[in-house]
Length: 268
Length: 88
Image (cartoon, rainbow over the protein chains, first blue to last red):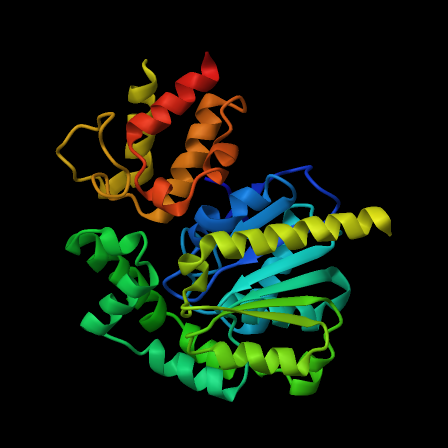
């Protein structure tokens, strides 16, 4: 398994399509708790890797990366990505960040911290960091027992929902350990949210895809209103799981943008 | 060693200590339903197969041509067939 130790932790990553495309690196960021890099691996990452270099990794505490007791603030998790890029010799590469749900929040935070490193931002039903998000995160991650199992089945309905009771219990146990035995919820809740004016000042082109029926659709609309560079599309009949519900559409959109980026580089 | 025995050994490596299936891994075993591989375990398996069978077997390219439903429905035999086709 591809693992690398940074900041004293083992991170599981996949570096695909090496040497393909221009110098850009497409970095995929997954969602919170019941998610890991496989969401990208089985939907978008492999096709994108046919034409561009791609990095996907399990956030700390998730998937097959280490699960430390602490260090889950937004700032710390941005440091994780920076350290990972340094360790892999990719720190000089312009980045195309693609984030799903919480991954979109991280991608936005990374862009605010290092605008010079980000060439483009793709947000898929992304969360936007403010007090309302922190409150919602605290209540949704406070699930227990059957509610937690149901949340897992919903999140992984296309794959893990098919598993036996035994397997679902194990996945629920893993999720519960991350929520209850680390400082994840406290750290994220304590992370300072960016100012609206800071987000509005993002210069990199932003593409936002949201589910028409998603509970965070309004976040996409706020971003589009705030950011001149934001191109928003709403996907009919989709919920917060738009990546799974409309995989082909999301994949084609990302591929089209990647190709367009390549053409702009050639023309420029 | 046949391709099937190599793939079966890699599957057991990936599942590791959680391996508690009595049934033998056959060409008909499906990754999701029969072997109950988690999606992240399938990623690890693809990587192990890549390392074991070499660059001539392009799993990333192969998977990129598949829809999610097809990947979930994959059987061990599909992977064995792909590997054998690459090596002939």
